[in-house]
Length: 236
Image (cartoon, rainbow, N blue to C red; front, side, top):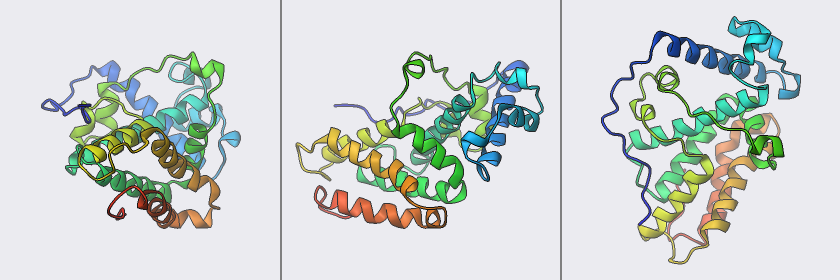
């Protein structure tokens, strides 16, 4: 049987070095600067020089932390993906099937309503094909210092492996079948693709005013999608 999300082992308080904490603080400061800029500007109108100034570093130093602004956007997304998995575990849903999907869409919807610009940009990158250059880039794992400073009160985030939203949905579907919530033989690949397109695509199709109602749109689409697969409707 395929395992669910890895269960944390004690979640001991991290003890990063001073250098590790400084490095993490700068990366998180750049993340925060990006979020502020994306609240009023598209990514195409956000510049490394501005982000560096807001984070208190020189422009050249930016490239010691990220190779380009798109990688910084991906960093924001990786932290978001980790937060969803950690919060699901904190609420006792780590081993849930359809309940996990309910939670993921609801939590994502709440975050989108708070930071629409950032999530529209992040989700757009998730839907487009990766360039050959992006495919060859090595992704550096989130450090203990980054996890601790980003989520000081969310202990579950300190030790969980990084799992993309796509893989989180795929695993939840498998658990749903194992729990009897879906018919045996459900096409996991096609259903995961449909869920991913719903998660990432709905915010991109909505205009700015309508993003305030993104959770309602998610609910409608999920009920249409999952209604034919599940004996019960999803209750976002």
